[in-house]
Length: 379
Ligand SMILES: *Cc1c(COP(=O)(O)O)cnc(C)c1O
Image (cartoon, rainbow, N blue to C red):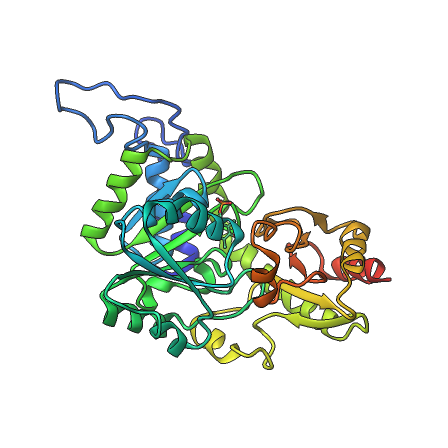
């Protein structure tokens, strides 16, 4: 089955007792058993719930994986992956990554004896230099947030394989419609479902997908043991959201391209970060592993003044000033003071998160209106 068909049909089927075409919201904590150990596959909703189960199968299918697990947030999904490790293990992570992932690694897991190396992964040689016998996980985010660097997933898979380590890819920005890390050699793919998969800015959720049965057992064991699961109502909303993922992402890509081209020609803009430009340093890798370039764009302003950036994010009217991304509505953000405020200034500036950097999550509105909005805000 191809993507659009899977997005709509995988994991779901008409309700057997009523014929309801939509998966019911099984708002229940427990399930009556016919006798001890004699149940219909569901015992307790932390372990498994039918609405969540349908969604887990659906997300696994659109990522070309066998096993899916949904969590209460993207960070809870990441937490599950790191809990597969032991004290003394080492992780090599993308340096330019989601601020919350950095905070989880540094302030929660380091004190349990797991060591993290934050590395510029655009050059695979630099990654290999950090591999040693303790390396157990390579953590990749691509496109990176907010600098839109592209990391070669196949090259990272080769390094992970040689090191005997797992490769996990945070595929939140690309979405499974544009990129499938498992097909490129990753062991686990992670999503902040909150973003494009949910797509309507109404749910916080995370997901993991993998192919290996042993790995899946461990994933489900941790999911059930730690209990950071997602709710039936939220699972229902995301099942609905994913039915239009392909349509939405097509428009995100079209609008993203129009806005990137508008910005690159604007006299007040210094630099535009968008992987669709042939001049983007990793454009070839993006072409190789992605089917489109998405609607996430970052840019800096000439002079690199904090006041200028704050003025733009304040003046826009259609773009909403907010954290998050991937919804139908366009959002604008200021990484240095918002999403990346938890990363020390000298660390963030090294990766390009300077004071005038602005990040756009281009929605699916009319592109002309979005361009007019930015034109006015830039003055
Ligand atoms: C938002 C985000 C996360 C964290 O997900 P939550 O659902 O907010 O917990 C992780 N990675 C990326 C790339 C994100 O954008």
